[in-house]
Image 1 (spheres, rainbow, N blue to C red):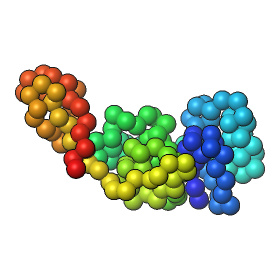
Image 2: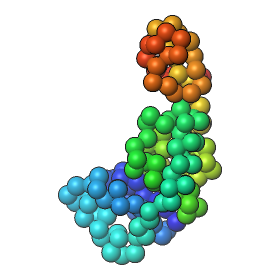
Image 3: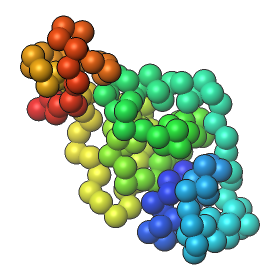
Image 4: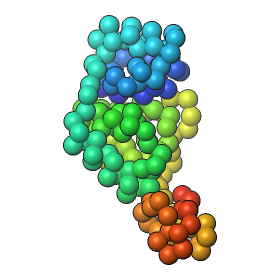
Length: 152
């Protein structure tokens, strides 16, 4: 089974596998892309609402990888759906790919290259330059903003 992100409908992704998506994806689509969602639902696409426990697990994994601030509520629910259904997540979103890989969820990329490696981001203070493993609103040392930094 494949769980389809918004980009799958925008890029007219096709598959012979069974498909699933979530109601929030339909809300993000407009025009012909929304009609495509409706047509796929009418032809048997499963509409899934993930358990809040699975969404919380995705949020924890996103915090561990440093992608928490990059994921929307829809993104979290899509990853949670793929996790719950033991399905492949179909997306172009790098943050979703990173979190999915952290959870052992397979990913199928549509229009972009997929991620080459999972990253656990660092956060660096713009004021004092200190680095932190976890995302915070402000530096606990000097109070400046933090920027996400590639650990490589």
